[in-house]
Image (cartoon, rainbow, N blue to C red; front, side, top):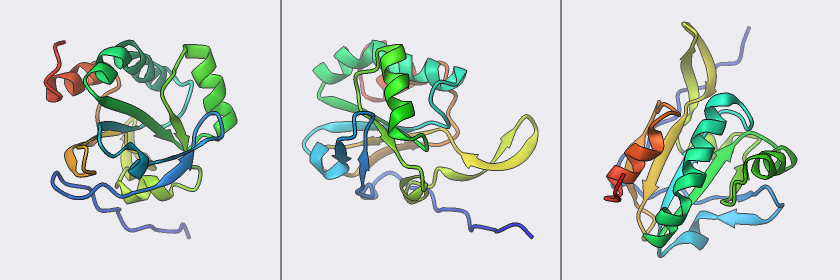
Length: 163
């Protein structure tokens, strides 16, 4: 008999973003509360160095300077261990924090672990999602089941930045 987990509740705009502390690709601890005072794009992706996740990460990389100039921090979260995240960052020139959440605790806080369709089959996994968090730690946007391609352009539009 397989273990069943109840669906994690999804975050809605206006709710306080759950705080967390995780290790990044360099072993440093990154906490959401340390990013207060700036807007944060917090995105969850299934696995480092896979095609879709690489596309998404590189799109964020290519927009990073304009996002930072607008006072927006970008943070990625996956189940990958810091060593793999470091490889990913070095391979693709990713200079923003990539956080390791191997026990899925933060994934569950944000409602991004659960049932999803993968090639027509229902499986348990990471639901590719992004959250826009305001400088006070409040969720501005919660975007679930996003597509890797074109996603950063959508985020830029939501942030009021030119495409």
